Image (cartoon, rainbow, N blue to C red):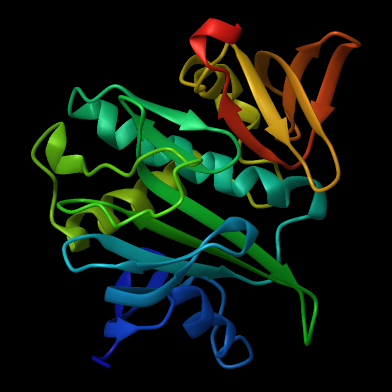
Length: 249
């Protein structure tokens, strides 16, 4: 591991290959200060939501960052949405029509370009770790067809170097979220809803024990997804959203 370097308020550690940047940070929770970041060239067992694992090939941006103490519980779920919006803004700056797929993916032309995973804990003090993977030049293999196909930034425009994209992301993240005592999406809720995947369309939402269908009306200030279902307006804090086939809408 090379000596860490400073990027504004962040301390960045670099690794060539790790099983997972999430695991790397979690194993060092007690030794690292808030705003520690680890970036890896390769992940051999990258982690995603709902227990998903995949290999992250060279040519992508794979990193996780640590916040201590953790943002207030009411705001923690908004951090990944906010981070997804920041990535979407960087893609759109290049003219790429990226969208935020609730709760934590970035989509371009029906393909997943980036995914995020948030984890939090309270021992020995409260902490929050957000992991982000961006496919820059080569999408990972996704064997499960029920999920969106993977894509890469290079399919839609000239991708930045991983280190440069990390720098752009961290600087924009800092400049757009002024205080960790506030929800990061308070000031960008309108913009977030303007780039929300499938807004105004019918989707399926699968939870741990039951599934719903409804029209996406937006994301609320607490980060919940708002659906107009047959039973009326309902808000959801977790779940997996999938598109309803056109013939069933």
